[in-house]
Length: 109
Image 1: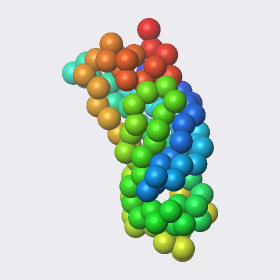
Image 2: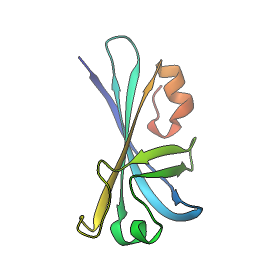
Image 3: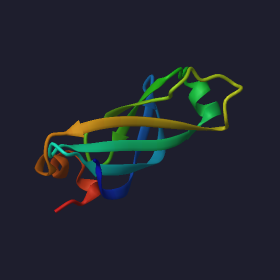
Image 4: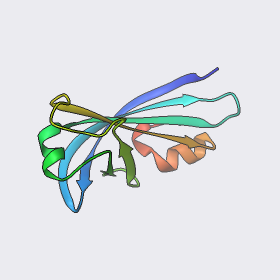
């Protein structure tokens, strides 16, 4: 059973084909039974900007507090989608020590 650990908010840039746009993202960390930590990364981006950049499903989140993360749209984006497009990523981290290093914005002690 997953144990909720903490939510956090961070700032960064969304990069598609060399073009960037500032974004705010959220992180949700959950402890797993085996001691690992699952981190869910979520953000929303403007549909029209994404389409203008040639976005289909994947982009790169450049975090000011950590490594870049590939974020994904669950379908192929087109003009019929919502004006605000949710992008997500999931990572499993082996330990809380590694979580502190990879996601300092979460602030786990």
